[in-house]
Image 1 (cartoon, one colour):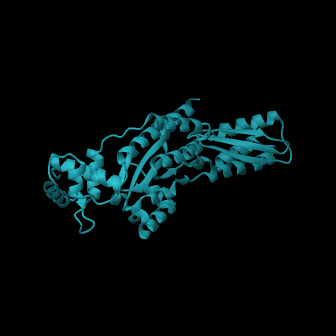
Image 2: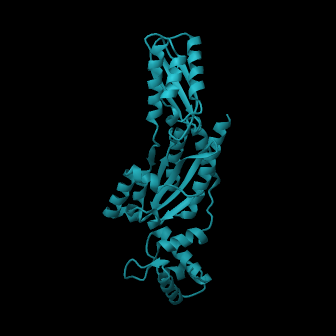
Image 3: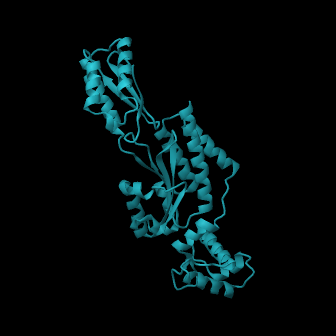
Length: 344
């Protein structure tokens, strides 16, 4: 492990802070003028050369300016970064926005709230929504709409709600609908989509003997509703935010990031967090298109288990302190809101 003394740490911290702010390589004179480190630019220049030798800084051009390396950012994020704080207004805005969104189903809550996250951070937000495949049916209810249409409402244990219209030639009476609801819940409650096999379907068919039209209309509709959301959905908010950073004025870099954002399959792997709020910098992302990006991700929970992921994608030169503070507040409010939905 590289041992780094206090002065080098202060110089590295100053360079990273300045580079995050300006996006320009930082020289020794800039550090000497802007930061009161008690040493002159010649000493700072020597220390910068040592930091470069340690692999913590890079010199992009022949000028004297340096920028942080992936290793430098990693040290900064893990050891040197000060915890950011939000204004009272920002905290209230996050809280109120999520509370307002909480009137919807879980996947809609997450989608709606993430547009705010993208706006507050000025980064691209990626959301992996819950999948029915990994959930269990909590309840199924059929409700008559008019003389020929029923609506089925399927609630999964991860908060997903699916609706499907079922058309019939004739609407059965209330008692029959109630009986069908009881049969469906008896046979399908607490089953995953993969557990609804031929044996289960035959049991339902036998118990609905004499109601062939209903059975033939209901089962395909329920299956369709579940199948429709079998895969998790990937939502991208604020895709153009990335172009507010001068790093992406380069056409090749811009093409790389567009390609990355459009590749939903790779995005699922890219945003996978390990524990808590995960920060992956540059080549830690394992995708060539993401070698100049940082990805900050976290899971959200429902019923005590993780059901999806939210991630922020931006250049390596982002204000980590502020972004992590926003992400922390956002995830806490979102998870609290989903927990309250469960209790209601």
